[in-house]
Length: 128
Image (cartoon, rainbow, N blue to C red; front, side, top):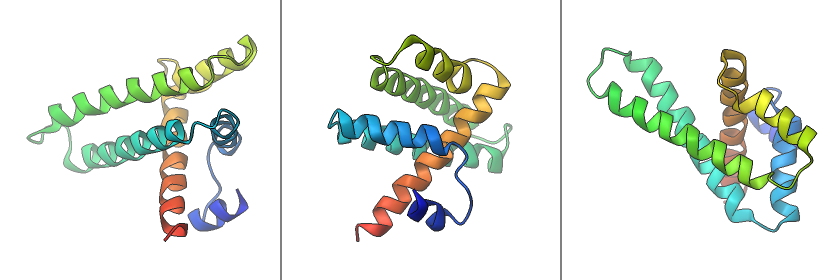
C-alpha cells in the first residue's frame, strides 16, 4: 500500500476497504473479480468526470448518465458478491458506508472508486 500511496501522491481515501477488497480476492484466488471491479471503477470515475465537464445540458449527457447508473449497480453487485460470506456486521458496515442511497454513502463510494482507479493505473504502470 505504501508504494500505491507514493504513486498516487496523496493519501488513499478508503485505504482499509481497498485492502479488504484486495485481500478478499487474493484469499479466494479471484483476481478476475478484482480486475472487473477496478475496470468498472475506472470507467465510472471517467464518466463522472466527463459528465461534470460537459454539464447536464450537453448533448449525450443522458446516455452518460444512464451508463453511470448502470455501472454503479454493477460495482455494487460485484462488491456484495465478493463479500457475501463475511459476517453480518461487516456487510452492514459495507452497505452503510458505500452502498446506501444517501449523499454521504455515494460520496464514499466515489472516493472508493477513485482509489480503485488509482490502483488499476498503478498496477498497469508498474507491470510494464
